[in-house]
Length: 373
Ligand code: NAD
Ligand code: MG
Image (tube, helix red, strand yellow):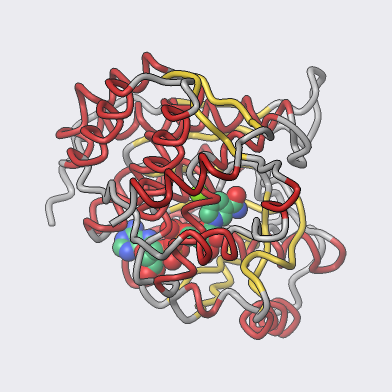
């Protein structure tokens, strides 16, 4: 693979929880090649030692590069390589991280870097939150989904046999380095799944961004560096604004769940991994849009516009027909239906989402019958 890169400017977003200087505020640097840019990470590594958690897929691709850059600056990397996959986002794997940190005598001042996708990021963040009651944490997300979503906002954690993401902590990183060049090696399907979460930001709060995505979708899928950086930047800006306003999801952060209630039901029913999360979110968002249209919140033309964009992104737009009963059960709504009130993130229009808790059960059932296949 050629190492010649077109020069594109690095962009920086800041997550500000307070308006005064505070270590909880942090920058997100987005650029083509930021992984090898020592000035962006060095100020966060005062102790000349750093633990790097990654996995068996990402290590051969990027660990060497990151380690060489750090060693060149006199920082000793302590690599911790985990097995790959969502099924390893569990207590046993978390313990492997603790084992390595203790065996290598990592101290409270030794930062831990997550180098990988959302699975590595969530595991590593939780390890950083709890090892020695909390050590500095750095995110280097290498999937599109992790760059636009999971590496920003401070949700960390693992799965439990009885539920996904059930054990965890809110723990913010000190810095996020999103290197769009790492996306070159990402499988096509994973790239498209990340695009689903990018489209989500346009749908819930930025119609101009959605228009921009309509124009630039082909370039985004072709991994054009300038277009990728802008898509990640704009997505991180939205995620940052939302978590600044609502760090622990008691309000607006819920809007990020557009398409997710349906989406989780789809992922769960089809078996995790069969449908990628982003694919289920796309199909789930179509259900949310159809439901919004049936409640006269949004026009049919807007529903079709959303469908067209997903199709161009190569994402599914029709949710599987599981039957209304199964959907309600998987969405945890089977008991609430009797009370008549269901809470959903719906679309008022492209660029504006709302949480509605007055969705009539018949309307939901009709949507699930008419819009699944
Ligand atoms: P992932 O971490 O499993 O990565 C997908 C696949 O791509 C894996 O096989 C991975 O090893 C591989 N990979 C990673 N980087 C690569 C690269 N540059 N080149 C080639 N292959 C690469 O999945 P994901 O979609 O990144 O993240 C999903 C996880 O994120 C889920 O566990 C989900 O719960 C979590 N998540 C967390 C948050 C949050 O706020 N913390 C938000 C959304 C999702
Ligand atoms: Mg999601």
